[in-house]
Image (cartoon, rainbow, N blue to C red; front, side, top):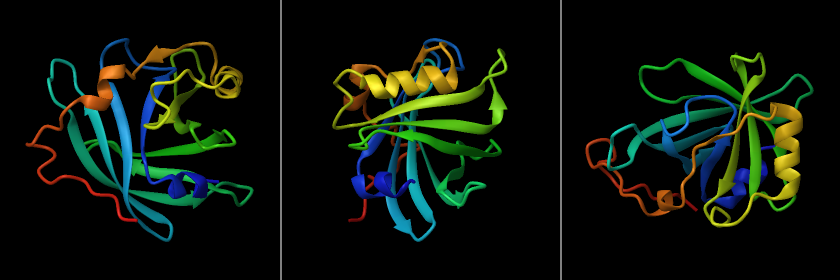
Length: 170
């Protein structure tokens, strides 16, 4: 259930995924800015290839339920030109410091569902918890494309795409 992520009120970083090209889109993160029932307003950030600052995209994330009624499906755009993505929270560790999202529409070249392992900014300098690693391997396969770098936490926003500082609402 995504309620534990809502309560954190922190930035989450994509640590790695099972798709993409090594070194292409780094420093991917998401920060919930506001929550209105089953909709979050969030700021997504990414370091695009060749860029020196983080590009931002503010988007609405609609929270829906899966077939068994769990509130764990996130629907959102990654950029204005991209279609809506549907990702399901498939694992959240006990302290909500690490979680896994599985894409409900896209597969890897190997036929696996695309997955991302995310960690919060409070834990991003630490090792990935073993339970998270194991769940990722079990549910997403053995392909690991690194996305996070330790310098990501200190990268500046590009003022062209991030004109106003993001301030999460408490």
